[in-house]
Amino acid sequence: MTPTHPHEILDLALLQRGTEGTAVLGRSTPVSVEIRATRRVRVTSVQFTLVHSLELTQMRGNQFGGTYHAAERSSKDIGSTLVRTGTTLREGESCFEVSQLMVPADAIPTLHGKLALSGWAVRVRVSSDGNPDVVRSQPLVVQSDGSTADGEPDTHPTDGRHPGADLHVVELSTRSVHPGVELSGVVTVGETKARALDISIVMQEEVMFWAGQRPQEDRHPGNFLIEETVIDQVRLPAHAARGSMVPFTLTAGTVPAPTVTSPVLRVRWFLRAALEVPFRRDPEVTVPLAAGTRIHSRA
Figure: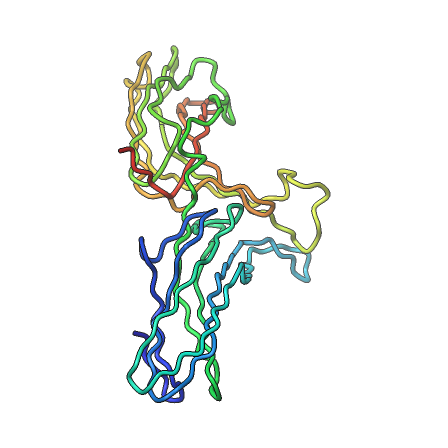
């Protein structure tokens, strides 16, 4: 029970059924509140509101013509339901009110990236006769629905930033990533003078920035700040890199942000295999992955 402030006539405790504190994109989530009176009161209505907050790293300009990074925060109410009631409570008595809140399918789920933070909360407002409204809120974790991670995405290995004709990824166990999943496969390496072979699972964030001006065209590469997070990595020595077939196993222990595509934010996942070659650019190959934060039962 949330502690009562001296001037408040009601104690409120926000509750959730099912998986406590968790919702899924595109689905409704049940919420309820326990209301306890500290003295006689007539409760008139209870409003439940779903709140989304987003913090994006932006490029800002200063008066000297330079630029700097700054976090821009926004918060908005996504939807609410109002429950009309005429319940009279005596001192020490409690009642419960229950509702459902819909999480939009196209919303940005909960994520904790280097450039972006997306958070959710449920807010409840209780009105009563002759008293100020009492408001409480509780964090909510919104998971991606997992649809992009359930099936094998229709994608193929790409050449990477510095393609290598003799570098390939084969026998990949899955292209769908969720917390705790193991990813295994084989990297084929042709004859090379490589010093080492690096294989990693990478999460890449792209955040639209404005620098005080609108970009000339949407989705132009220069309109984005980009950060990469290596989720897991294995580095193999030169003798392994010279082998024609190199098996590997990586684990996505955590998923800070699932695959996301929106006008201002994009999160992509991929497997990267790169050779460290002296005196020239390191060749690499990448394989797109789809990441979700919701784990589905396979039973």
